[in-house]
Image (cartoon, rainbow, N blue to C red; front, side):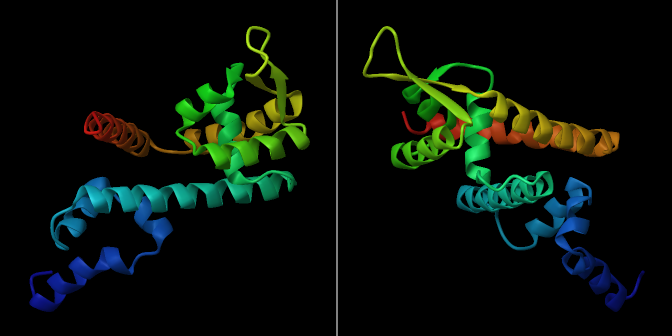
Length: 182
């Protein structure tokens, strides 16, 4: 398209796509379209990460609904994955998952009451609690992991490579921001 109108239509095309369609565009086309809006700042990246996290929680909510699970929230599922196969103290969980104490305490109580997390006093320090997943929680995590593994196997090699790049960039940002706190 050599005309001015054709060029304008080409530039507007990515904006006219749905969010799902945009997710499958090559990263380079999204970077090019973002560059026209001005410089990308750390604040904008932080806001994008927050929006992506909220969308991921929506994905988890849909998976919980599909699995018929209604006694746990997506945020609580993320706590289960943070605990994983380990036995952690509450302090370790807070540091590993970067949770706020009051939110984690509330969610842990809910998870214990719903039989997703076993909480026991530490044998070394009775004031400290040790956390581990119950069989019910392991089963839920396995079901969610299977869904994500299936979704991952449906991706082509370019999408898989782009996820790897995104992970690397986000990991470097985490290290950069952590270092700036010192």
